[in-house]
Length: 322
Ligand code: NAD
Image (cartoon, rainbow, N blue to C red; front, side):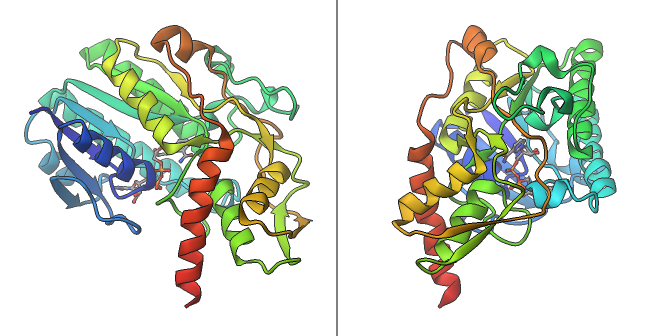
């Protein structure tokens, strides 16, 4: 039986990935600072541990795994990474985790290690036009990410590439673009736009008002979790090291995303635009490389994932109001 380690297994993508690996027949160990808030883990073993601590990393790598998925990071939505208040923690915590884990796999060996980078590494200067952002993989340099979160991801991408170059470690690096779905953070300040908008719409009365950061004309694309998992697994099974985008190319404005949530809710609410952290003006996944290298690109419409996500968040909102 193949053995996999999922770092960040108590998080949104990690929790879903553990389930997927179990369905595929892996023995899975998960590690995280915390248990998953919204669902019991599917892992064979779940270890509560801080990956900034070298002893913890040593303890969980007593043998060579077939596959390691390094998803643990200090992260959140725009309200967390663009205010500047968490910059030192974001950079220090996430970089330390990656330094520790690569140091360990250099000592113990590993079949392959996957690292989740982000669309936030792309230069701000290519994302000023909301209609026409440029996020093809080779456009990452000259580097100019718009957040320290993005700079740390870029540093860590290079760290993984260096361990491949100097120590022959098999690495796979993907740049996720706004992954969403049920069982993700939906309140508390670390939630991302789809979850935040679903929550606001679910909480609002008919004819009420919800707040949108900025003018709402900033564009993004959002990828449903199941498609993300498919992309991760395909890359892991391939010889393609990346970095490669794993994202949707169905670009929408934030206002349109709010309208979508309203349509699903069957509720009319008004949008009030207020100042807030918004990030770049436009961002969209360029899926040419993934198609070329893996013969695959995500294809399900945004609406389909939003229906599942809205229904799950509406249930959480109702339960919280009781
Ligand atoms: P998440 O915050 O839900 O999961 C990250 C997990 O890492 C959390 O459960 C957290 O407790 C854990 N963690 C943080 N510090 C830790 C530490 N010191 N030791 C052990 N565990 C620690 O985020 P997610 O949405 O599941 O994202 C997973 C990965 O994908 C992250 O690396 C993130 O940067 C990357 N990513 C996500 C998105 C997205 O849209 N969700 C987009 C781009 C990149």
